[in-house]
Image 1 (tube, one colour):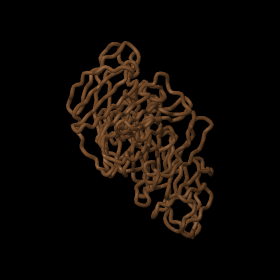
Image 2 (image 1 turned 135 degrees about the horizontal axis):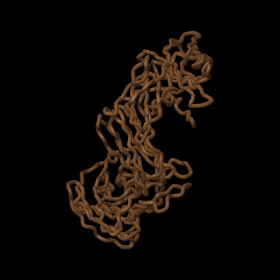
Image 3 (image 1 turned 90 degrees about the vertical axis):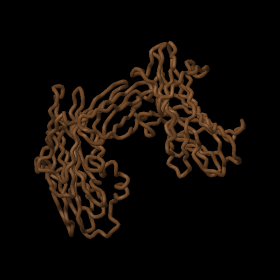
Length: 525
């Protein structure tokens, strides 16, 4: 079995920025005392580990090899570590422990794995679950102003993972246990202090269900690794503990049953060269016992997700990000693109620029304007990721925007235009419609907040029109559109083969116009 040793870390993941700023090899204060931490294995011999030492009052952190003495200002500290011992066969053992120690003068403490108690968890598992649960666990120090901001942890099979009991309220202990069969079963639990009998008993009837549905054809690679991370409303020692649900080529489905609470679904898309090239974090899921939800990844059609043009500093400004992304994931799930952006007025080009957000987070189109009037901003974006080969026949490979709006250099605002979301329904897991069939496409026109101090007006769509193309955009056929509540539904007649491009046009009563096109929105098969 390949064992990954990646959990000897400082900081619950959600709190890393704060912790990173606090880490220091030597305190800025004069060191007036010292500490040495000895770590013993389960057979009593010394085991070399990395010990995390946290100042209780400030959260200042230090890292030191066990048995080595570190100079510290006098005060109260938490010393904690994971004592890992390898084995000739099997995964070895992890024993997590911590002590709260008053450091003055030359202080020494010992963390003894022989005092560790086995972490025991039980579940009324179905017959297809035959092995013990895999457990990720953490010991956390509540220091400074944040609970459980500093942690050490490890993961192992049940029976090979131990924790040294400690009732201090300055400590927390959290774990995630996962059983694997036809479905996965996941339980998380957090306690103040490290309990004398760590673990717990769980019932399947008390779990919630998350069903993952991963479609094929839209991503930059086929391998999709889906997972769930614990995200309690108040950060504790379970925050961001992760259950890997399935790692496989799309399309596939997977089901995981979890303890009630708040969970973060995630998807990582892995290219053939091993690079993580996409994915993201959809909205959090707060689940009750017995509740069932579905999280989709990779459904057609991918297009622009967020950014609208802005008028500011006597310029039209546009950020070329999130131009091709998964609507089920949101703005964390967009792919890198290369795009050509053109601003024109009355048929005269004001500025033309080619940009990319690959390898940078500050790409920006900015074109100065001198007079009020009607402006046209066009964006032609294609996926762009050097170093990998895209899957043959990749869908949503190109998206274009064509905005027409009135702008005044003296007035700062978000342009009164729209982005549309397209969801072709009734497709198979390869994002294919049947030949010569009719596909209903759900269309919504939106204006997301732009995280800016600029004026953001409410704009109402007056009309929505939809076209489809079976020849890559050479010719277009109007679709029948029906207004249904806050969305629209378009009936698209499919060709006998190939792929379908979709184009929408949204206008308002003032004459502002938004045209959006997704090429190869879905396939025929």
